[in-house]
Image 1 (tube, one colour):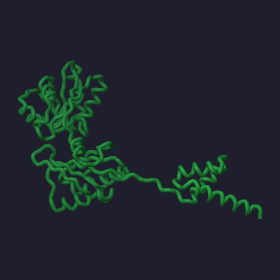
Image 2 (image 1 turned 90 degrees about the vertical axis):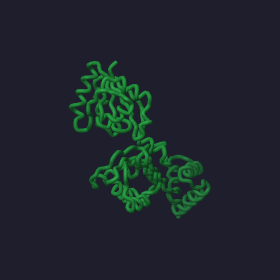
Image 3 (image 1 turned 45 degrees about the vertical axis):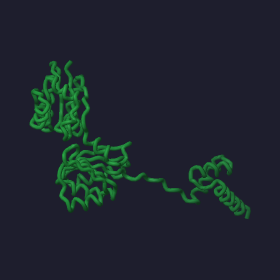
Image 4 (image 1 turned 90 degrees about the horizontal axis):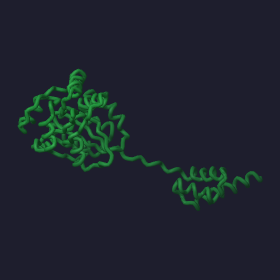
Length: 284
């Protein structure tokens, strides 16, 4: 049955292409590739001969509809990117959307992902994270992006090119403050490097050592904010408020103690003293 296969390809090491991905590329009718020259090297390595069409950011509207028409006519297509999972910060996401609108079946053939690979070896929290893609080359836009995520407590993941790396690290340090960061360089390739450090140390390092290769940045999230404890005076005022709403002074002190962290006995004593003082003033 005709469908779109979303096929993950290696991010560096060709040995990471799965047997299922090889079978899919061998049996589909044609391949939609970000750069046919890059994909041709992959296909040649595995002895696969298959027609290809280029599908990238600047032709995705026109070419996407052509691909949809071919699938509706009965052909199956595998969409691939130069490296990693297509459709993640990639024009392939538009093709999947078109398939969904046209009622075309889509099937995923999972493969390597630089985002997940870098997160897994980062040494930072992995339970909650956000992928932020590439930051803008324009500093104003880059700083505005960083401002938006400044308070995000999740681990943050970015892609970065070597010529922009130092500027990005400097802006992160200025906007977000010093945090832990892991810089994963050339993942799965011969010169793979995992650098677990801090933003301040990373800025110093790459000022002295010009960066080379593609980077994934895994950045520690914002520290969790702890609620400020109310003052003792505010806690006693809460006791009086609860008592005024109908609770006994003892129960009001108990509830206020739970909410503020102060001792029930202390709150009760101070509130009772206030009441006595107030009654004395009224009597006078």
